Length: 509
Image (cartoon, rainbow, N blue to C red; front, top):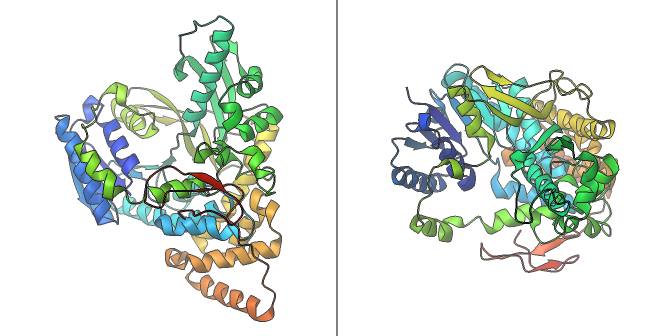
């Protein structure tokens, strides 16, 4: 029987074509049956056209069935891959814009802090519905591979309340691994251990990384038997690019002794130290790319690309189709996991799983990101042991926020949601408790259409907001665009042109 893979949220142009192409590089998967599902029929149709053209150009017997019916897509699936963004860009914009009025400056806002917490409130009910469909419609023991953020909260809820074996997948470990490799390569050339024109692949550098998603730490780094970990602060600080673009990460590396997987812009959102004072934020970021710390950078990029179907889609149809080959296969874990399970060929990656003693000094039952091994015997996750204490302390603070936010989403508990916001490292560093309470009410009301889990609580939140005005107790808000917001293209495409200050500029969101 051909493998059936259901892709939920298939209107995601990047993930869908990449993951499908990755799977079709495996000879045993040439006849895979893909079920593409999305709530946006127009995007779904265009993605399907591109994907079917790619399959035909590679002469493969694989088939695609596109549908807006999720249960139909999941029926008899061996694997379900999720890439949904619940609420789309409309909700995402509120995750960034509303907290800015309270002084909270986020670069991405999809994992933790005010934006990530609210993203979880929208995503978790939708994912639990997908889990129900997997239990009822998919093949027995179907594996759920989740790419949707906030990764840890979502994966935690699916395993604890969804009743489906769920693995969370991210590419942050690979990205940082490449950075470490480039630093070691440059050092080795300088030390005459490599020729000036000789390069390293990340597979030449052995790593062990562990922690929680977006706060995973490179605990071991070895090259040719050498322990490179003590050299990393110097190697990063002297790198001509990273010294500029990764200032915040390098400062954490210098103080903790361990490099974090996540980008400069992401990492600053999860810590209470670098983005809490408006005048200090520019010291820690770089505006050459959004991911280095730009205010609302990811939202700006997504907003500029939202009309890809008007210009990019016709151009993509005219391009030469990609070749599905081993050298073109991406480093996304999904296809490699499926290959290992189905063929027995071993694969080692870093996956988000439930902590069952794998990291001893993080709470049992939370979601950790650790090395994993896949083959015909299944997915096996070794015990890492203890994290270094500073790394564990940082992760533990985030884990408790994740836990409160996840439980709040499952149970529609407004008080617990506010307590999660209050304990968030950055939100708590910027806002006082009354500001947090009002911020949470405002976000609940603004996002009511995507929050069926809060049907009862939202009407009460609306009344509280009205009473704040009537009683004159509403906390003061700012008309603030953030410390480092770029003016973007308003045509749907193009590069940002300049940084804006205070209320200047003409941002796209």
